Every structure is written in C-alpha cells, then in structure tokens.
Image 1 (cartoon, rainbow, N blue to C red):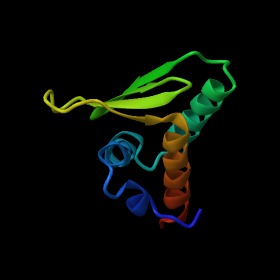
Image 2: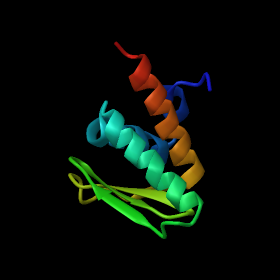
Image 3: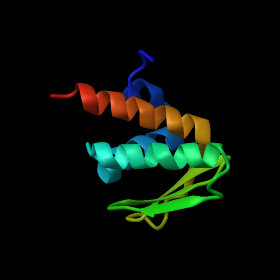
Image 4: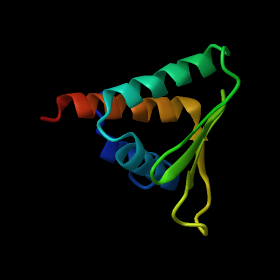
Length: 102
C-alpha cells in the first residue's frame, strides 16, 4: 500500500473521523494498534460478535460488518460508520506510518 492515510481520508467524512480516532485515541502505541488488529481479525473470523472501545475523544463500535465512531466531545456530531474492511485498511496504514516515523 503506497497510499498515505491523509490521501485515504480526503473528501470523506467517515474516513476523516477514523483518522482523528487513530490520532487522538490510538496514537503511536504499537500495543493499541495490535490489539485493534487482533479484534478486527476476531470479528472477521466470527470468534468475536462485536467489540467496543471508549478512548480519549471517541467511542468505537466494531461489528463484522462495520466500524462506527462517535465523537465524545461533540454531542451534535453524527456517528460516522464505514465497512470493517475499510477501517482495517486505515489501521494497517496507521501502523505502517507509526513504524516509519522517527
């Protein structure tokens, strides 16, 4: 994947929300990134029916079909959703970016 996360999230509100979630709640933590990828794999293999995580700024709800992210700081903001495979793509791009940043 040669696409950057910034390019991936351009012109798409749900994808921008994913980038904000990764930046503010997952940050540069390899452990949190791996945990997120483990949960996605468990959802894909149907060993986990659903999963949720509340972080610093967002609440994430994962199901085998989608990822939904609620902004905890903005009550008027709509929950943003996208297919689980797109969310996984973003997490992988985030992992690559954090591993390559000094």
